[in-house]
Image (cartoon, rainbow, N blue to C red; front, side, top):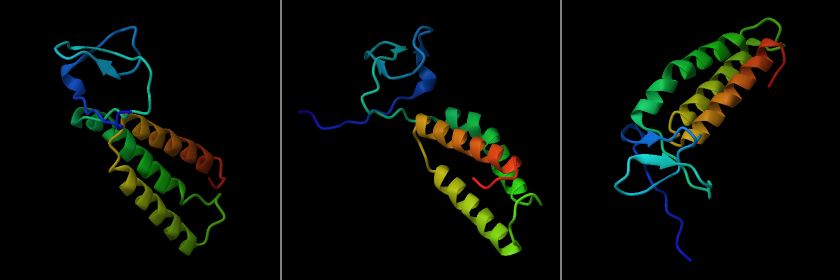
Length: 123
């Protein structure tokens, strides 16, 4: 049995085939990439991928902090400050994430939380 290996791939120099929705496998010497089965591997984000998400993440961060000030939420000042500190901590931990799939999951969770906050509910 082979030990679990993690392969880091620089996406910017590879071409994704149109019939392959995700990046996973490629043959050495080829610049064509194709998806087969995930098998628990991680796809690492490049600086280019992180730059694409930067504006979206900052926007979500600001919107969530603003939503916590909503008068529809039954929070005292101390609770609002605590919730804002929790959001800052979550975004700080999320900023260290390098897996494309985990980053997308975190963005989806933030969007869901924002939609709940806009309804005046606590996520």
